[in-house]
Amino acid sequence: MSDATEANEPVEPTGSDEGGGAGGRRVRVVLVDDHRMFRTGVQAEIGRTDITGVEVVGEAADVDQAVTTITATRPEVVLLDVHLPGGGGVEVLRRCAPLMADSDNPVRFLALSVSDAAEDVIGVIRGGARGYVTKTITGTDLVDSIFRVQDGDAVFSPRLAGFVLDAFASTDAPPVDEDLDRLTQREREVLRLIARGYAYKEIAKQLFISVKTVESHVSAVLRKLQLSNRHELTRWATARRLV
Image (cartoon, rainbow, N blue to C red):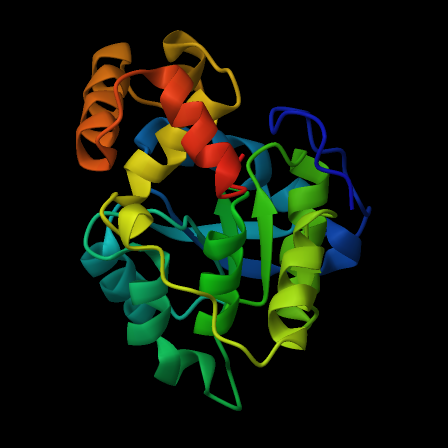
C-alpha cells in the first residue's frame, strides 16, 4: 500500500452498487485526533458514504472523549491518532480492550499518525491496534485500509511493517532510555522533525500547531536533554537512531 502522497487526493467511486461504494459494503468509523482541522479534512475525504462506503459516526479529540464516543457508537473501525491528550492512543486501546475482545462485534483500531517512530508503531500494535498508517496516505488507500481492518487484516504503511516484525521477532524488551522518557510525546515528534532538518514553519504545518508552539517545544527539549542548540539535538537524535 502506497502512502507517498498527501491525504487530499480525491477518492473515486469503488463500486456502482446502490447504498455505498466498495461494492455496496459499509463500515462505521470513529475519528480520534486532537486536531479539529485534520478530522474535518479526513471526514470530507473519506466520509462520502455513497461513494466510499465509509460512514463517520463520531469524532473525539482526547482519550476520555474517545472512550465515551467509541463505547456509545460501537463502530467497526476506529482511526486512532497515537498522540492524544489524556494518555495517548495506547490509553484508548487499554480502556477499549473489552470492545476489541467482543467476539460478535469487535471494534478494531487503525492507527493514523504523523509519527513514523518505531516505538509509537510498536506501542499501539502491542496495545491491540490492527494496523498503522501515516498521515501521508492517500484517501483511496485509507478507505481500502479501513475495509481491510474491518475484515481483520493487519495493515501497515510499507516501511513500518519492519518495525513490528523486528519487535515481535525478539523476546528481549527494548532498553529504557531515561533521557527520551523525559520528553512528552509531542516533544518527541518535534525532536525528530528538527533532527531531520525541518524548519519551524514546516514543523508547525506538519503537526498542525503554531510556530510559537514549535519554539516552545524545542526550548523544552533542549532544557530537558541539557543541550545548547539544534545541531547538538540532531547529533543526540541521530546517535539514538530516532531520525
